[in-house]
Structure formats: structure tokens, C-alpha cells
Length: 139
Image 1 (tube, helix red, strand yellow):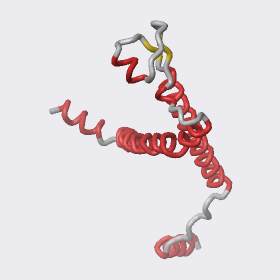
Image 2 (cartoon, one colour):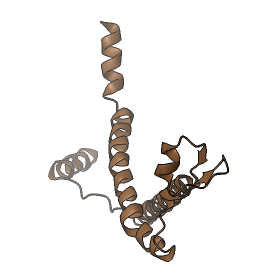
Image 3 (cartoon, helix red, strand yellow):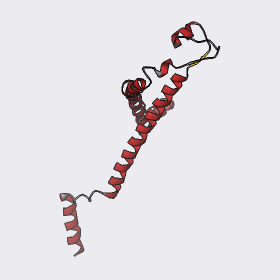
Image 4 (tube, helix red, strand yellow):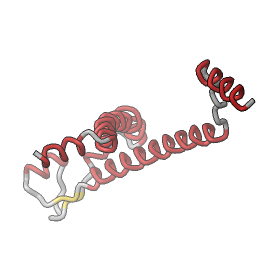
């Protein structure tokens, strides 16, 4: 029974829940960034490259020339698919940049909160009454 209780306490701690939320949001964020790269950024780059797709860029190690990556794979040729690496590198750079901007914004918000502390709350009616009673007892 002690093990189950310990596990339950661990699983519902704030850090574990925060981590789970972070993983879920991270997965959704990854999809957004992938769409940004594939659907928004890469088409203009492909246009500049005259329609060539990064995923189709490869180098055949056997010295033969193949029409496409698909044909090279069908032939069983040893290939370096450096285009996939370039695509993954672009994905990483974009994700890192977006995360940098987000952290910078969060830090700016935190700095503003520290510089503008909230005024202390006015005493409640109960506190005022207790203060009056204390002052009367002192007299």
C-alpha cells in the first residue's frame, strides 16, 4: 500500500503535471513549426531553387547517377540524403528561434511584474474591527 500512496503523491505533484502539460503543448507546437517550415518557409525557398525540394537532394556513394531519390532507393544504392539533414537543420533553427523569442517575452513579462508590485490589499472589515479592539484595549 505504501508504494501506491507514494506513486500517487508523485504523479499528482505540480512538477509532474507541469511536465505532462509541457510535453503535450510541445507536441502540438512541433506540428505548428513543421507546418510553418513545410507550408510557409520552404515553398519560397523551393521557388528560389527552381522547384528542387530539399528532401530530393542526395548523393550516390556508388558513383552512379539516378534520376531521383526514389529510383536510387529502388536500386538499393548507398546514398547520402543530405537534403533531409538540411530540412531537419532548418526545422531546428526555426524552433530554437521561436523558443528564444517566447522565453524573451516571458522574461520581459516577469521583469514588468517585479518592477510593478501590486499594492497591498486594504484591510478587511474584520481586520479593521480587530485593530480597533486592540487599540481600545491598549488605552
